[in-house]
Image (cartoon, rainbow, N blue to C red):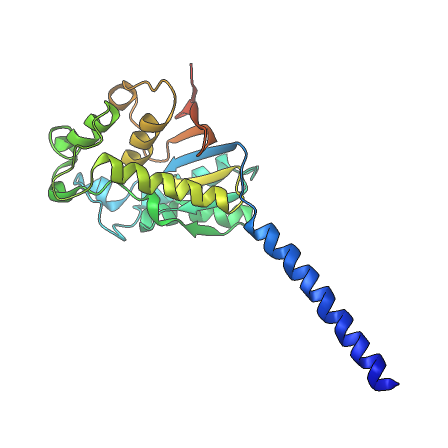
Length: 236
């Protein structure tokens, strides 16, 4: 009698676990969809910025004292903690910029590998003021429709956009609807102008993103994006 009762209990437990596992599996398998409200924030001043030289190496230079103060200021602006996740690139300057916000809002920083800066190739280590005549020549062609253009020794527009798009898809797949993404000036500006409807290409020259500047977009990886604001200025 006891053995029969015990066998029945074990069978019931196994059946219950099977039901739970099936339910859990179907929930995990279900794709995450729906509109996202994505905020990109450029990192604070790094030692690379201060040097005036192009530095897209990984993990790259750390923040300067000024950059750390800028990171603290970002946390102050985000004190309401209304976002649902924090992401940073594999470069240390974005992770350091994200940390004060992470500490304040008690949300971890997830490193997302595809959102790092556009690799400079042969222009690595050259003066930043020469970027328009070298490093940025190909990205300028990308936003004009020529994604085949390649930075010598680096990537073309197709490769850049795919790695950024894949990362944003990955973020959506994790269930995030309002992510805060700490990334890099070139990566943020070029991806935005490649991705949003009716991009204002003059932004690169007239309103380039400064350290801790932000860009906000709304949409989905499937349906596309529209610009909400560029460094605090609402889209027209």
